[in-house]
Image (cartoon, rainbow, N blue to C red; front, side, top):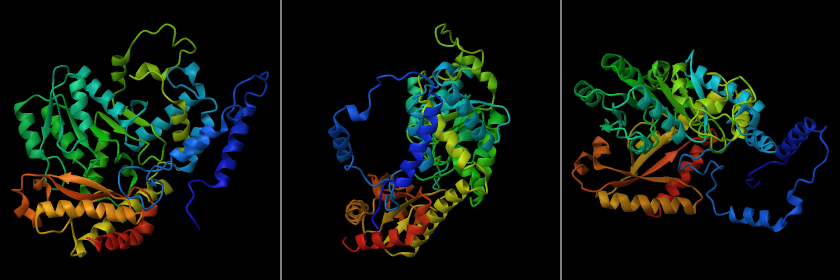
Length: 451
């Protein structure tokens, strides 16, 4: 049986949902609104043909970049909501979807242990982090921000946008922030905010949030947790000691960003920012006399830097969380644990092979490995060839450039090399990857035979 991007029953469910939605507006007189049938039917078929030029992101043999398909429930709910196309900026633009956003964000805040909070969805993790850094600037004006050298490049770039001084902190071999380097900086420089990463996008490393928040109390700096990629692993019961303690400590942070369009099973774009202190809402105050007139209740635009935002994203997230609750022992959490298990198994296979050397044990579901060779340049060349050979076998991986200092101790003699070394990287973000791991491994070995 061949792979299909959809099942007919999913389309039937969507049709039923849209018909149910339509009954709420059935009392209105008919209008002459356009339909797809009234337009050039070839256009949408042409678009479908153009979309063939993509990697098979939804298939388990795609094990490359951080791309996870939305859950069918999320996709159907988003499409259903698009027949209304709500705007969650003001309540009169998206009444039901605004309430659904507030309820969905409340569940995310609860997942992180925030009893009081202010939060909302954004169009991306970049915007979520921007708002967190903007509040950092407003609450601690003139004070710099620090983050690890493995933190997402968003933070240094957004700091420039906000005209905030940014300090990069060295990382240890395991990809986590070097706490001695952070303390050295904090003891000599008054910091405003430190960004801790709960799941770096390169290696899936988890900064010790528990130790960083404790240091923040000693040196009086705020802590923002960038959990855009890794935030939902808060629900996993199979984490190591560092990650478990780090995720529990997010409750002590000042803010957190998470991307439901990554492990939250949502379509792009759906980010989220949550602040532990609701009083930061005062920094969002603005005057828009033509916007917030339909209700005295909170309009989401009053606590967001963005204006128009897709209410359909909130509907999809609310529906997914209703179908798959954010509970540690639920199906949602079990899927995350399957991804962790797949990453650990792949790392074990790599470690037992003479062909490869894993870079570090995975904390979440990202695995990186070196292709064994006589020289760093040869290792890079072999990694590129293996990347292509695997793709020819429909196994899609990713490449990453690592500085020699990031290589494992077994390759310490390469650390004097003056160029980055190309390595392979795999994000095993789908629950199915655990079932497909042996197939993935066999195709990787077949590709390696061609080197």
